[in-house]
Length: 79
Image (cartoon, rainbow, N blue to C red; front, side, top):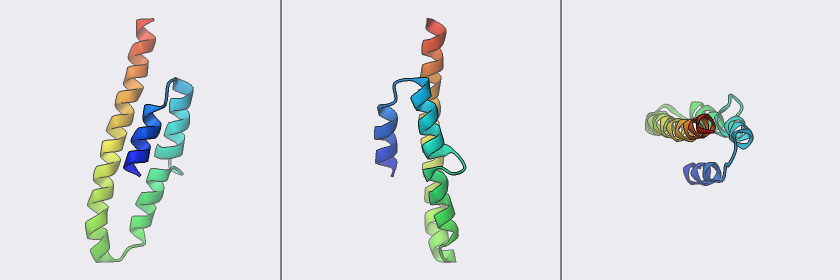
């Protein structure tokens, strides 16, 4: 999932597409939240393994998204 997230984000070229990307991946009904929900269905030992991994992935992907978002903001301010 992480690889496709980065690849798809790389292709975003405007703020409208960035918002659609955010909704698809980072919203409450997004793909990342779906992964978080799946962890809840695992048994305790699996949760101990996958829970921290999902949290780390989530933080990493949010940071990458925020950088892209900030780049668009900076580009807009430069105009």
